View (tube, rainbow, N blue to C red):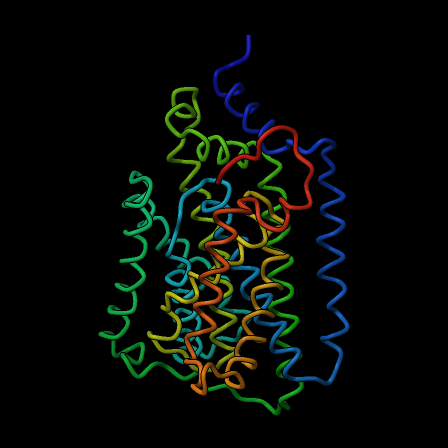
Amino acid sequence: MSEPKDIALGGARASSSGVKKSRPWAGALLGVSILTLVLPVGFGTSISLMTMFSAVFFYLALAQGWNLLGGLGGYLNFATALFAGVGAYTAAWLHNQFELTLWQTILPGAIAAAVISLLVGYATLRLRSHYFAIFTLILTFLGAVVVKNMPALGGGAGIFLDLEGEWTSESIAQFYFFCFLALAVVATIIAFFVQHSNFGYALIAISEDETAAQVLGVRTMDVKLRALFIGSALGGAAGAIFAFFTSYIEPGGIFNLDIALDVILVCVIGGMRSWLGPVIGAFVVVFLEQSLRLLIPSLSVFGMELPTETGRLILGALLVVFALFFRRGIVGIFQSRRGRNLSV
């Protein structure tokens, strides 16, 4: 006789693989193809293009981490900016105090964010629904307040990274292009294997019915905590690279709700519950944001210029449309599924 836990995971596995003919490696090939197609950009001479793709990979790494608990597990999490900020400030402080390089600060940044995630997880993961979302939102603002009152981290004025070396603008853009690309690839590989493991099926079981999953033997608290831990470590690593990339960070910029919202937008548009969703969504959202930023200043309505927030308004409307009518995102649109689509 099957164990209750096996029954729960089996049901989640069936739900997650409702495609008529499941071909996970076909999706893997598509994901690798998307990432490798952009490699020539890193060998080009366009600084603006390399910088834009660096932003794509930055959000891709964050989104893959968020999607573990937020997409597979069904827990709306606004703490992405908190984890990225912890990683960024850890890297900046270590660099200025001990002259550590980027490579020496990525792991400490990831560890610091993961440690914070354990504290956050034990405090919040017993909450459900909108209570968890509100709590993580408050913690992000609290992170900014704490940093503003710490002189060792520059307070409200922020902190500069004293970077030395004879680098040209082109070589800097190229270096960070490949740094963010490497992290995005690592995050995508982790997301792929998690989704196709018992750990991923347990997260899906929690998303569908957490009480039933718990009754059937899934250790829901441990599973959720592991998902948050992995996602926060990826966020901390991305934040560490971001600190060197910008060479200046300040609380209002890094502990910014816009980062958390953009990450959610990437996952919703690309497709939640799928490691491929953030890959597609990151390209769509970043390119759309850049296009709106260039287009909106040239537009006017009845002779009046559009405010700069119009771009955020359009993206917010797009988020609502996908959440209501395309719940599986772009990935779900191209998947032929048996029966009714699962809601997320």
